[in-house]
Image (cartoon, rainbow, N blue to C red; front, side, top):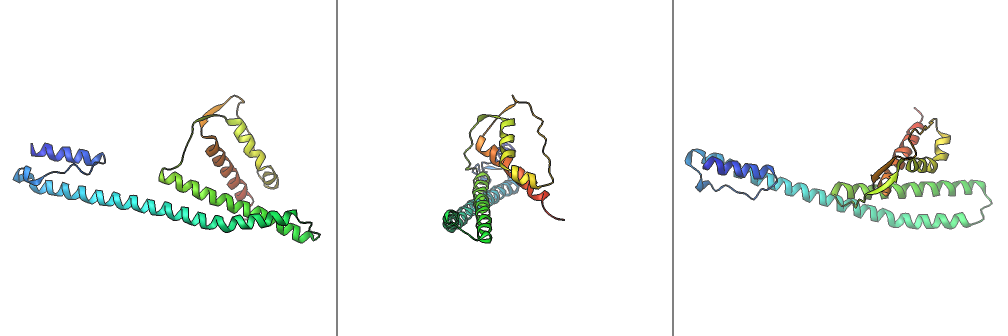
Length: 193
């Protein structure tokens, strides 16, 4: 009976239930120390899981706060860059600077959004829908988005997928994944070694 009580508590612990305690007073004297060790193990695991959950929550909050703090001034910068783009700048250098600012602020904005999404995904707070998506269309759209960068790289993409291949996934997230992979492939190919 004593061994069975201990085994039930260990089984519950292995399934994540740390509250199934073994009362050492209900255990035979020969297994009493073992029961105390199991109880101590349960307490230690419960505390470790609690610390891990608290740490994960703090990390998510930190990422959310930092992202918000970065987005606020970035929004102002994007607004001013947009205003500069509307101005008639007769200076070609200034026009190039504005174009670079526009590209870099958009890139930074995308990185911040990726950071927020990654934080949500790691904490399990990412909403996911299941939609029917044409795989070829998704990839062609992503290739079209990066067409200019691909042209300036040494990469050549060959798409070998039938027109009627559909997948079931979250379209927004699949787009982000595909675009992210293409962006990094192109960026890496443009690096000088």
